[in-house]
Length: 90
Image (cartoon, rainbow, N blue to C red; front, side):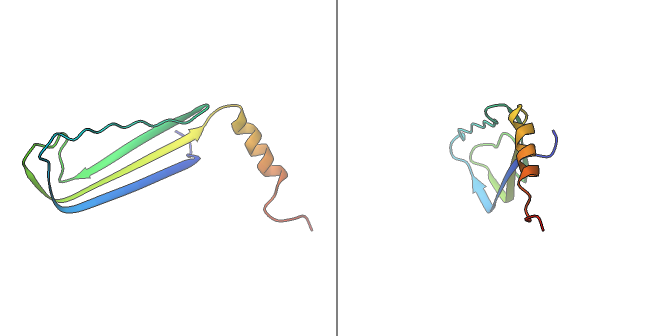
């Protein structure tokens, strides 16, 4: 994917974590009206899937979501940026 228009990242860490129930995790990523997206997750000391009633220590989970518009409006937005410079003409 080319350079994203938007990127969101989040991380969580814990000294220890125990799952007493199977987590219900759902992940959806999208870019509307027309676009492409991707997501990635990095886990440290937490396998996938995690085992129930097992203590995991020094856990870290990082998640990143990236999206880019790909429709015809993408070109017009770039043209608008050129017509509206950050600095006024001298």
